[in-house]
Amino acid sequence: MAKTNTTEISTEPNGDLDRRSFLRKSLAAGGAVAAASAGATQALAEVNPANLPPNKPIWSQMLGPGVTQSPYGSPSPHEAHVVRRNVGWLTSSTQSSINFTPLQDLHGIITPNGLHFERHHGGVPAINPNEHRLIIHGMVKYPLMFTMEELMRFPSESHIHFIECPANGGMEWKGAQMESVQFTHGMVSCCEWTGVKVSTLLDEVGVDPKGTWVLAEGADGGAMDRSIPMEKMMDDAMICWAQNGERLRPEQGYPIRLLVPGFEGNMNIKWIRRLKVGTAPWMTREETSKYTDLMDDGTARQFTFVQETNSCITYPSAGQQMSHKGFHEITGLAWSGRGKIKQVDVSVDGGRNWRTAKLQEPVMSKCLTRFRIPWQWNGEKAQLQSRAIDETGYVQPTLAQLRKVRGVNSIYHKNSIYTWEIDTNGGIKNVQLG
Image (cartoon, rainbow, N blue to C red; front, top):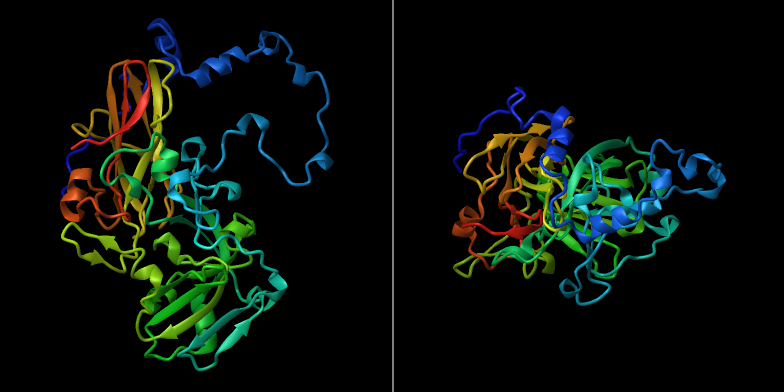
């Protein structure tokens, strides 16, 4: 897909970048937009003038609780709205569930453990780690069964990677439905994962050279399983027991899960109980009737493992409210299952003109990358878009480009450019162009 011309960010004080004067300019221009959101109005109403400068606020006049009051830390009660959310009509039961990460409320690239998106096919099993085992068998010289203690004695590694459900955005092939980036893109999260490389374990059991596929199976009630190429398992796949420095949470696979960086989220089998080596894919339910891409001509693509280059603007984004004209920082996330993000371009006029955003370091392979770009909003209608390019040269497609190839009947791998439309009152909605 051809990349259109972009312009680099200028460092001249041209209005877009004059951050030092944005408050002065916005106040001089009239300050708040006429129609403020209900949330913003409520927040203003809750301000107690007695706690504002030059007064000494009430919390500075007393001692707070000691550390013994919070043996495990919790967010501030003022951040109680930052939670995972689900969409009722997407799931038919509590055992088959989806919870979306609140991307619009997060900063940086790391997803807190309690906000990592959830996708379950048979509910969350309550596993006693002392009784859990990982079996490696099939076409191997020495079939082995590992306890948790034995697994954790192997050399371990820690890597930061995203996990994305291939159905992320899949509800919107035929039209815009969701009014929040939490629901359009919230089935992607990024964490530091710690465990042992699968290649280390496969070396231990002695894989038959004819073994080219591995069946990974979970210990959940649905026995979630997927066939994975041996090449991937010997590359960067891991058996993980920790996430962001602590042991996995039950909903993320406690006590162990498989990590296959950059591949479909469902292939990162949680509560993993066995790896079986064979010569061909097993053609399980999850890779035949499920997780295949229905094309416009009625055929289906199978084994589309890689999560292609994608991005989204998290601020300003659908469902939010612009309260002031003047300076704003547009920010968002980009990622690619093929490697590092090389560039992100941002448009405020629906893709007619583009500017190159700044990528926040570190930029890592198969990891979320934060991008930022300054913007002066003049109070007029705007259409915000982001377009990511990865290190292989792949350019995130427009919706029209993707539909031309894929049609509109699929559920999976929708990585097209999104558009957030800002109206003159500062309201933001999800729209589809072209």
